[in-house]
Length: 152
Image 1 (cartoon, one colour):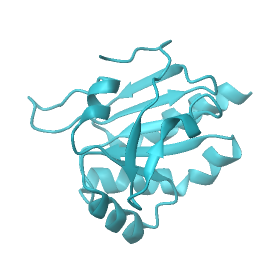
Image 2: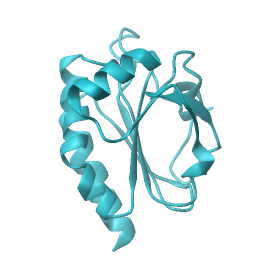
Image 3: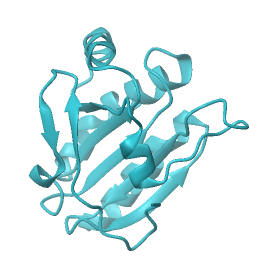
């Protein structure tokens, strides 16, 4: 499966950085969401991206949106990553890559790296933006601009 613009995101579950089961239905269809898939905790590009989302997290919250980061790292890795960089948003572990498959996130660089893709989902659970770029720094302004358009 691969989500496209206009699709409704199906419900899913995954463990968060605290080892708790996160159920998407707790936020899907209730508020705008920014769900971003990234390759790996504690790598330069992924740390830059996570810290940029952290630095602008209040801007997203002020617009009523939630940010969720997803990679195939373990819960323990996510916990260390979140603590080290004081990440205030949800990190989900996708070790079996089911969420990557559900969303249709493809590997990049000839299959060597998991893809870096950001989805913006409106308050009805509909995908309104899919931003696929290896450039970690471009995801945050694009997502924030799109969320602002949703609420204005």
